[in-house]
Length: 364
Ligand SMILES: [Zn+2]
Figure 1 (tube, rainbow, N blue to C red):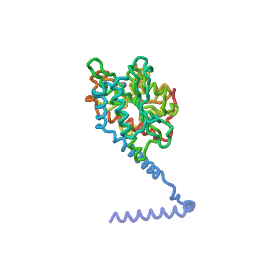
Figure 2: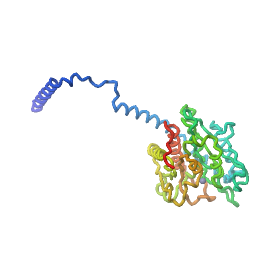
Figure 3: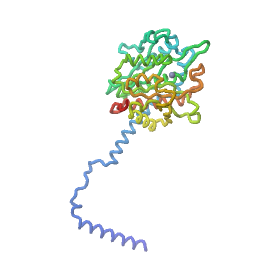
C-alpha cells in the first residue's frame, strides 16, 4: 500500500516536470533530431573491430601452417650427417643448396632470377681463400599483389663449419634453425598466395652461403642485388632461433631482437605491437645496446643490409654450450620455441608486407 502511494506521487511529479520543460523550451522541440544515417562512434568502432578481427584471423590462419613437426623435419634433414656440416664450397653445402632448391620447387615458389635459376653463383675468388670452390646463395620469391616493386628480404645462412677431423659440425641451431624458419615462412606465404591472399609487397627468401667464413653470401647479394636495394623495405635475418641461453633457462619463451630501432622507430614499434597481438614472447634487447661488447649487430648477415641503410631485425637465441661445436645437433632444439619464434617473424613480415605505407627510415 505504502509503495503504491509513493509510486503515484512519483509519477505525478515526473509528469509535471515533463510538461513544464516541454512548454517552456520551444527551441528544443523545433530542433530536428540527429540524422539517423550518421554512424555513431560505437558503429564505427564495431566496423573497425570487425576489419581488425578479419585481419587477425587471416594472419593467424597462415601462421598456423608453421608447425613444430614441419620445422623438426627440416632441421633434422639440414643438420643430418648426410649434409656434412654444410661447409661453404664443399659437397655438403651443395647438397644443402639442392635440398633448399627442391623445397621451393615443390612448394611452387618461384626462383628470384628471371631465368628460373634459384642459385646465385658466387665465384671462388670472391671468398679470398676462405672457400675451396665457388658457392651459391639460394633465392626464391613471391611477387607482391599491389606493391610488387617493394621488397621484404627474409634471410638465414645455410652454411656451417663442415667436418674437422672425425667430427661433423651439424649446426642444427646455427643455422639449420633459421633456414628452416625461412622455408616454413615461405610455405605460409605461398599458401596465402594460393588462396588469393598473397602479400601486397614482394617477399624474397634469401638463403645465404659463406656466413661462417665472413658474411660473404649476404655481402655478395647486397653488391649484386637481384632486386634494387633502394626498394628493399626491410631485412629480417634469422640466425640461431631453436635454443636458449643460461640467462633464460627459467623462462625460455623469449628471443633476442637486435637492430630493430637502429634505422626505423616504426619498425621497432610495429615489431613490438605484432608480438603483443599474436605471440607474446619476451623480447630481450640486451644485445641491441650500442655498448654491448658482443657487437652482434655487426656479426650476422643483416649487417650487409643495415650498412646500405635498410632497416633490419636480427632474431637470435644467444650463445649456449654447443655454439660452434660438433654437439650443436637437431635433438637439442626446442621445437616449440622454434615454432613460436618463426611465427613471430612471419607475423612481422606479414604486417610489413600488407600495411598501407612503406616503413619510414628516420634515423642514421
Ligand atoms: Zn650463424
